Length: 231
Ligand code: GLN
Image (cartoon, rainbow, N blue to C red; front, side, top):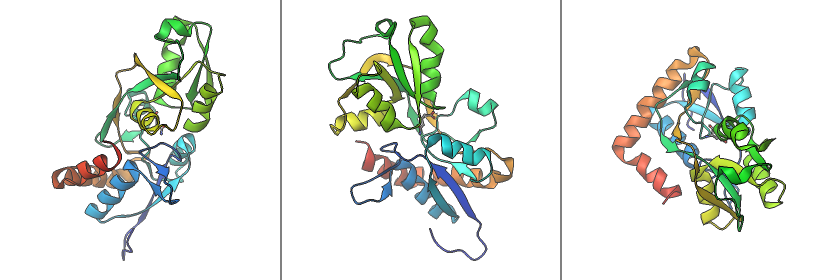
């Protein structure tokens, strides 16, 4: 970020491990689609910011407490969140939430989860999805703080499945990083990701995000960033 004479330095919170939207690469640099989009939008709009990688629920808590001005963390735009005070930007990427099982698992549909346990990540759209159908299909739920520990509960065999955003899971699986597989048909309708504020006083930042997003879509920068991380 660049120095500006009178510019406010916005504090923006994000997740820690949510590849390819935010993660630490092999050179120990914090990178990803959210990281690059925000940098390009800030440059386009001429605002300064500090990105804080806090973790998903910690990032939400920071914005709720006013310690951060906004969140960019692959946050799904949902009606529930809007009703509880989140004010979203325009959507910038569509993602569904999908059930994921261990490689070689015989789970083929929700019916196969009866009597089993499902791992979810605290306060996510994936957790909401699992909670909305657990009684119907008779499975229990264990909640984790971050994506890696949630996956681990499945690879260790403690949980029969976990629920993750499809582009995140597809990236890890494609890279051969995890012995997990997406079960086709076990996904929700999904919704777009949005940047969000929770205090109307930060509307100016939200407006700049929307204007910058439109501008980098027109310039081709948006597509370039997406293609860098998702092919
Ligand atoms: N898209 C999901 C949600 O908004 C997960 C976000 C995340 O884990 N960073 O709940």
